[in-house]
Length: 541
Ligand code: FAD
Ligand code: N01
Image 1: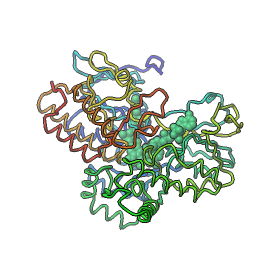
Image 2: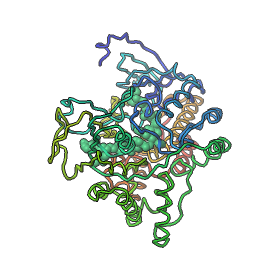
Image 3: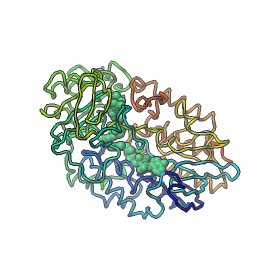
Image 4: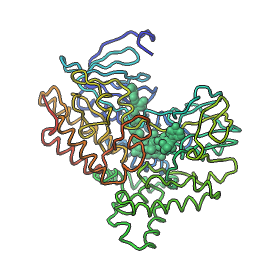
């Protein structure tokens, strides 16, 4: 809706910093910058804080990084006063936490809710960003930050007929705020990524019939979720400082020891025993981190992938369904693996059916349901669990124009290019949080968010103290960083999969490995060195 249609009264205001997004990234950025005395305005499309946890309210939504680790580390009182109730917190609990953070630090007064940022243009003459919203507001800021989330721009399936469906359509990433009741309904779920895998067992509890439409099977490991014991929480509270320090310098931002052995350093029996231990551990690290070469050596990965396929065949009674659920097209871990509760066992229920779209693709969504090349299905409701235009979608959804009118959409048409995932050549005074080219989605995002926010806050403070008006990534530094991100990525198996890490899930999106796989500790060291060297690779003027 344009400003004219809305009839809003445009206002003009001026800030030090404008940020997009009131998830954990935008909230912490606001808190940090406010503490440094900057004036900040945050815009958020949703009506509340929490980002991911505001939008993704589908049944079964919860984190798959342990709650204690998936939490803010920037305030020790906050750490001490918040009590996580489960090993993996539910979406409602994380949303309550996000609201608690907003209340505790009085963040809402600087957040404009129900407002989408449409465009941001760098005005070279005044060296300021002009930001326009769908509310008709136009504001200016010296610095502009996209804290817009890596998994916030949802994606519908590219299937004809969606608009003609007579029943209810839901998307996991835009779940209604009111309870959805599938009792006695015939329900379809399209997709088998993390959102589907979490929601399918719970939808199956309610629905009269559940049909899962799977294009690509994914690997999933049991979460073994449970209430947190009081002593676990107390122990974490007593040692938060050490835990956080370990996480900040770790590979994935979690409390996890790194393996030192290859999968082939041990006997077959020892290897299997290690995988059983990983399967029983109730986290992804148990298997991803079982051996040091699982993500770099195809033969090593085959051993864990085959172990997991064996587990699927053990659990799922119908051999044809079991086979269809076995991922064969990508090595374990190269598409984001899932953590589930009873996912595979759900396919043993009489009213649950898997449709393998590799054999019988969907041709159209009809008014009554879904047609495949083999069958017509009638449904009361269809759930799209079809994911996101990850890492770049929310950024390029805004029409961002840098120096000389350069459009970020155009610049990234052949693939996202950044310096450190923080700055972009041609876009002065512009930052992204957990942007492409940073560890981001390959890590515990809370750790990566805080590292980026701290780096940006320190940078702005430095610029102000040294009377510097603009900072911009150098084109050469950007090229070298992009090369490094690719080189490190190419040492791994990640680029072999058609994953959203590669942009492969969005038709027409450039195939580039988006995150930096060097690890959060290494990456933090690089960012710190860049800052210590007077922001090496950036032009300060
Ligand atoms: P978000 O939380 O995505 O917030 C971005 C906000 O920006 C959104 O609210 C959006 O509305 C707003 N926005 C975007 N564009 C605009 C615009 N143009 N104008 C105004 N507002 C805009 N990560 C983990 O590390 N561990 C987990 O266990 C985990 N679980 C997840 C489970 C789900 C279901 C999903 C989808 C993601 C999960 N993630 C997890 C990743 C998760 O996205 C991050 O952990 C984290 O919440 C991201 O915070 P953020 O503030 O960067 O972005
Ligand atoms: O999305 P996805 P998601 N026809 O992209 C299928 C985080 N997260 O929302 O693989 C038919 O993983 C698609 O098939 P294919 C986590 O980082 C975490 O589930 O493209 N199918 C795939 O099966 C995660 O990785 C948690 O062939 C179509 C599915 O839809 C990320 O968010 C929970 C299709 C999409 O899976 C995204 O997860 C939830 C079409 N046209 C999310 N288009 C935790 O547990 C797409 N698909 C922490």
